[in-house]
Length: 323
Image (cartoon, rainbow, N blue to C red; front, side):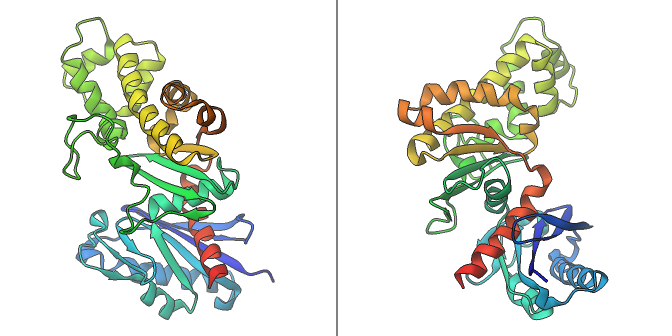
């Protein structure tokens, strides 16, 4: 029997699992709720229990697996296999994830930051088309990213490579949770899109359903902003244009710096699809020089929720091949 991989995508509300072939085909998948009580102390035991249960359920053995890969929020020490500062998991203290999971399953284990892992997934089986040079940006509650250059995931000296959400696009702009101002995250995340809309609505005097909804104190989401824009609401179109300007600026600078084959946009905000991508493309072309403009493509992610588990499996495959 061909050996298999296990991919895990650890999130604040659910933990997704998958068993994959070495070609990246998902054969089984399941998920459990993330129990963040008691400082997140149940998370690792729950993961171990779920893996062992499924292996016996499918009448498999632990030696049938090459390795387990996992994407997690927080700061990751890949060599030691520890995580710290994953606040949405209640992991404030350092967690020895690798040691515990390897001891309890007998399967080699590796983990990395969740945005990096999603980047690996999109690169391997998604929009990146397995090219060695791919940049991935995820537009969710925040903005994350991952950079794969010449086949290697970049980590940087302190694990902060690929933190595209903290590229400055609007000097003196909105304050970010990181403590500085004008980060891409403050204007292009799901919350950022709404912040831009509320800020711009103060000065907009024309006729607009979006403006009216904001003025009436309605709970407006980033999806609402894009829906109004697609329905030709003049104010919503201005907001989307502003958001795409900032995204195009950041992606253009990444293109000029790295010249990847593609910059892939994923995450919840990317559900706006071609409407978003084409506008980002326009600004990307404005902010890149000719050789980059003609060689680097701006694409939409293809894997959706599966990017994490597929990327985690590819992380395990790469890591075990190096060992």
